[in-house]
Image (cartoon, rainbow, N blue to C red; front, side):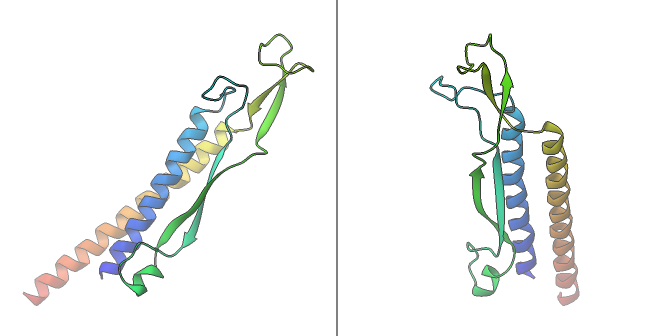
Length: 138
């Protein structure tokens, strides 16, 4: 029974991390400069999941659930805007911007939120089943 809670918990952690990356993408959709003030547009973050929970205490638990395999920046996600008057323009007059589609990021955020909610419901159901089993035993 406790394995079910671990599975739901790992799913919630994974979706929370995914939501944080999506939020960063939306917040930085127009960020052209890096922390040092150089022209270096923000690169879209992508979260990759993998099966299993390496942090689980039991061998069986390690085969269940999900974990973050990696968070990677998409180095190719840059689009050029023609803005010859900008101080950030190159010699041809183009300014590099992050290639982030806010609508697509919003859809991904809704999917992550729904997945998180599904894991919450699964955890609550597991807790109710455990409580009912304890009532029967007592």
